[in-house]
Length: 256
Ligand code: NDP
Image (cartoon, rainbow, N blue to C red; front, side, top):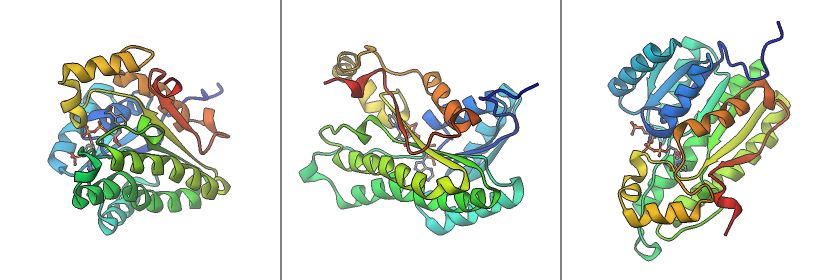
């Protein structure tokens, strides 16, 4: 039988920042398609508990790893150890991220540094060890998680928007360098989804109203709605697609 274009059975996937939120949902989506998944966060006990629960729920092989994505040496050592133990990932999802909000004139330099380290530099640190090994093998899929702020700014989050705009361009640059190794690099940019990161927003009735008015779909996204695009970008179906940024945002970035 010809394998399905979208088949992920047995593929090994590392999803950063998958201890909760969107990363956890993305990892579950891959596990449900038969991928072997490695969950990640900074608290090993928490990630291990999540891995056990996800394995029970999906029947997939789910492992746990912990390291701080802003620490280049720690990320490199952890990825090298993971490759030695499990093999080279077929799929890397760079999802770990952070939000800090303040008016531009009051934004603390330490918060700027934390955003750049977590949302941007980490992609470089984590990806490089993985894509070197993928290159040796001659295949791989990298999916970076951007945001509607990869394209649109909003008050109080200029630094976050700068990092997410850079993620879109890093995606294109990685695509340019890595295509020769049969590695496709793409970006998924979610609209508004209710997670711990934006608790302050979805608990605010005025912000809820704004999201519902501003989004053509008139609502927040459901985690499951990211999975189809992710599976496409992680599967053979997208073998000639690289450097793209797909907005999964209910139409938000298409309208003013
Ligand atoms: P959450 O705050 O719910 O989860 C963030 C994840 O990133 C956690 O697993 C956290 O792990 C991990 N993480 C954060 N910092 C580090 C670090 N230094 N080292 C290792 N892991 C770290 O966020 P979301 O699920 O909302 O966001 C996930 C991604 O999606 C982010 O890149 C975000 O920018 C993006 N996004 C989210 C949107 C939304 O509406 N929620 C919209 C558009 C984009 P730990 O357990 O260690 O804290």
